[in-house]
Length: 243
Image (cartoon, rainbow, N blue to C red; front, top):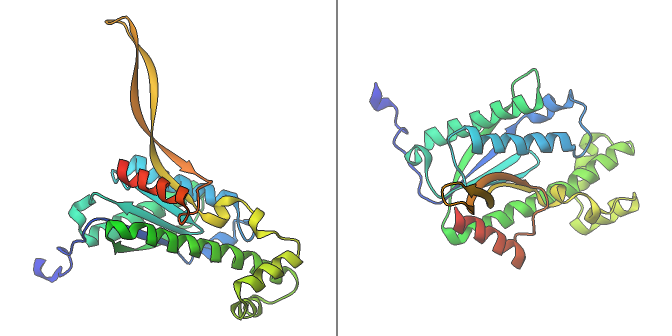
């Protein structure tokens, strides 16, 4: 029956991104009484889950870009020889387990995933697209819960916002005392988990002299630049080039 595994040899080309999305998180998380529209406890747990992927899974992406319940993992080297079935099962299942542990919930959480093959010069376009989605999600989420707090039913609030332009939503938020440009950067732009190099100083007793060496650690960056800016492009180019 091995021949019935018709997708087992399907492989993806490098580089590629695995985009992982939460499946039906809303109902599961409502019982945790998180603040709306954003709660730092959930964001911290998302960052910690991705950090666990770097440290404990044996899988080494270049970075993970996170906003809301979405995780984008860039790979320059292919785990499992790039086998799509493996990547689309192991990565979301590990993150599902990791987030369940980080949040200490009593019911399982689930991610689904898809693989996005890219050319190297498309990486910035992809990230800029997802960061724009993070911004859209930020302003719409704030506006949605403002309307709900003012007595709108959820369906009514969603329909109202669907008809508004971005500038109209900005005006609505400002009217209710929310300057969206002043909310935390991770809500507006997302955050990154990645590796960074650092130096340590030690002492060599044989040579009787101080020595320095370069080490690597995983960090969470909660104040990232706009990817479309020169600073953002340089930042991503350095991560991609150093990996």
